[in-house]
Image 1 (cartoon, rainbow, N blue to C red):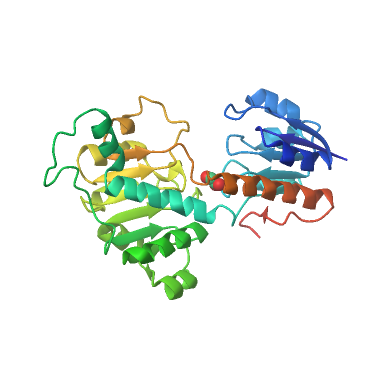
Image 2: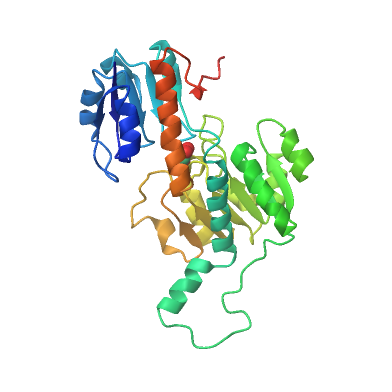
Length: 323
Ligand code: GLV
């Protein structure tokens, strides 16, 4: 008999599947995370946790929950989880790769189109009654067609993004920890140094996860090295960007705009300086948010919990780099 904690409201059909495994406690809120103390308290007697990125899974949590066998994270990223302590505590950690790849790439593309063609600004312009006539350069933007797009992080999401660029006849540059031969052979993506990627690209797309190596990658110097007409898109993690430096780059016209689905402190404060610029588009971390994909992510979490309940390795087990 498992004892399972689910930290957000999930549809009844999924709850029932978990109930087939044992006793389930669910935090019955869609948008409010479980307060930390309540979360740690509720985890104490649990064997499995189905959590979101809002929950920090650290030493305190593992110490408080000695019966824990598996943490199923409803995300592909797992920077909210201390993998080393999980391993020392003999707890399996699982994520949801694969199912969200295309959906997340699509949101990245939506941000690229929104920023390049100034869609949000244009919509406000109409809403505010400013549309008086057609103008030769009214809200003129930048083409993706035949542009040079630099992808930082050529994993599954990077490759799905690159695939979409084929229809735009764009040159695809990428930089990654290691070469991605599939992206090179199938999509003609061209591997470059980070420096070249930054200096040459019309669009710089960040899809990389947060790791000690990637954090703060996009800083003052990097933004200065970008083209003044470049647009920066981040669908990876907020802490890859030094936000004060991004604000400065936008303020000084060092880059032409940015589209961010992730920021350092989520949710972003409404008085955050980034929100005052018309050429900055921020979405609330909705990369994987299509109904189908969210269903599949929950289902993947359940499959991982079922695997562990049967004494198997979770099919999407995440392991530390030391392996
Ligand atoms: C979302 O950011 C995820 O990692 O799935």
